[in-house]
Image (cartoon, rainbow, N blue to C red; front, side):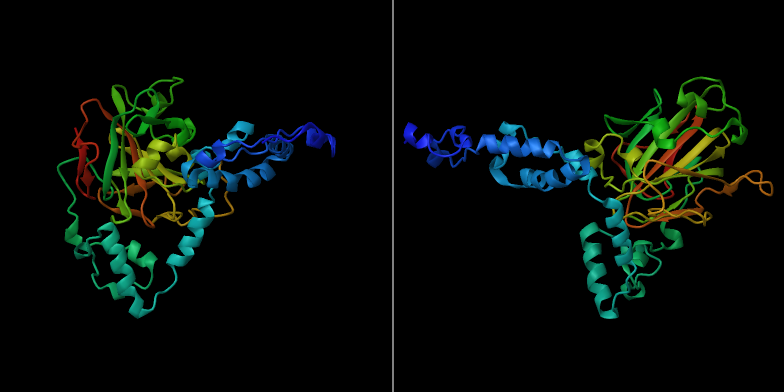
Length: 388
């Protein structure tokens, strides 16, 4: 069925631009042919909007595009509309605000009768071993935050004395090995820039040793002794793991750098999906030296893990609205009264997370340093990472 020419002559000029035809395949396929001209005009109006307004208008439509089945909104692509990518959509989620809200919720004291069912559900969901906890009675923990930060029995995690570097926390080994081309693997096949992750090197005057050679390579700026190599190890803490982290070796912490940033999930699947995820997320970088030169430990925040606490650093405040993303702030532990920094013994308490996150070790060692690890293996605090 087609509209006649006499009928077309009636009405405004815009009426002539429409091609009204009945398509039998509408009944078969269930697909609607959208009025393309009107959509093109609407998209043209959207393109004239400011970027924030355009983002606000297109975001709900993009969500529907990915959620609705059978590509219900795919016909929109025929008239020039393109959905925001899944990665960009996820990055636009206000994870910092949500994490602060979750932190407030974690600190709400639970009624005595509600503690056992709430904690039991968490234990069942994430496989928590409460037999290792210093206090096994679930009624002892007044809120979720206390439960997340539970301490272990002293004998639950013996510290290995035979190896020079131990695991600072419980978790899963995502990657380890030598640092090559100033890039580090966050998971297999996905790398990030070492300089973007650690930030620019501090001035030569602040270093315990001068660099081995003046070279443009950021990796070579960190290596302080001839013949040494730079190594890395990435440990992912699941929500059910022990949330405190400890000193992985005997070393001296001289500098802290805090990067305010996003708080996206750092599970291995997400790390494969988002390039340089660790460089986008909020993190605290502790740098110093050990007997072989440069040593650093980085605590990377994640969704609902806005709180990263370093026990000896009272000036550190993570996931704070006063800090904007894309910047960083430094603090030196080397003062006139303390010219060496903060000495840490292997296995000593260093800090804690809320929920779970990631620890990244980057350190200098001789070429004969060997890791005692396999990618993907579970590891516990105190177990050996490697030695000479």
